[in-house]
Length: 115
Length: 115
Image 1: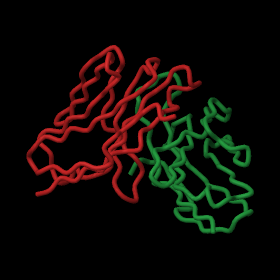
Image 2: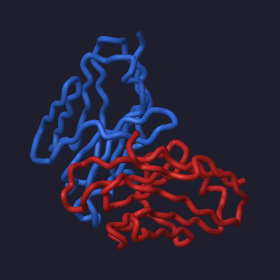
Image 3: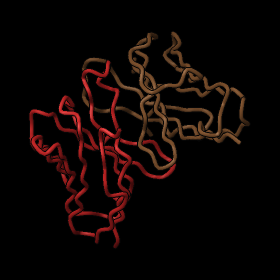
């Protein structure tokens, strides 16, 4: 158990819809990262938040947005969903940005299926 | 354009023998390299890392070798055990990517260790 909690574990929805994925980082971790893993692809970095502020952006679509709340949990919002958005979405957390140890703690992922 | 490549989608090894997983990268600015292991229905877990200023890092049965001139790293597992059967992801950190936690992952190699 990494200590990172993601909900929901599975989600099935239709094209054009909007969903919200939620992540609770490990206790004390200030940084939250979102990654997308599509079929046969490696994990693609989407976005990072550090203590409530956006720190880095990767290949995140404009239809996607995220935020980190004062209690440090984070939400990833996916809107106007397309078939190609079907993927496993991982949240990860780390203790402190800047003191890089290389270790991110990943949740079990949220599997999104768009029909 | 893949900056981190794992050219072998799968590898099968006999228990007790050595497993060698390979990874190539293109960006000479990467300063940190990591290996993550992933079991089905779980998130990736950190295994071992190496700084770009080193050429070897060892942790128990796991050793990572870095050849900067060839832009190549490898993970050696000796001896291999059935519990090592998992997907192994190679990842690299780009300090110019805004955050060192913005890891760039390969597509993974599925290791099967047969008893």
